Amino acid sequence: MSPLSGFLAVIVFFTAILVAYLTKQFQNENTNYLSPNQMKNSNTKVKTVEKEKIVAETLNGRFAMLGLIAAVGAYLTTGQIIPGFV
Image 1 (tube, rainbow, N blue to C red):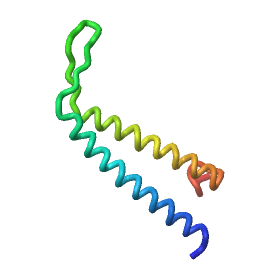
Image 2: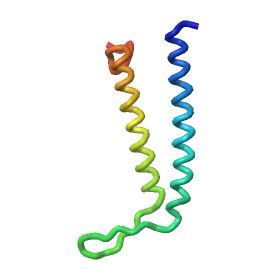
Image 3: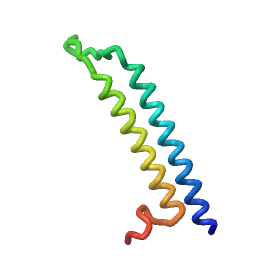
Image 4: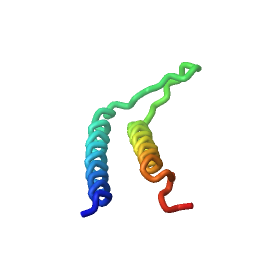
């Protein structure tokens, strides 16, 4: 096995562990938001925020950061944002 394929296997392994961890965190956060969260508007009206929206935005932010880290890693290793794409 070449060093590059070994490195890629390690990266895939760590990515799988990270996705499994984030999935578990997603499930834990979903149970944390059983009671509806409320935000007060400037007009003192009460707004209800659905738990699914809060969890979805948190997960979306985490995956966006994962993509940013992947882009930086690709740039550091190959010098291109999308390796092989000119």
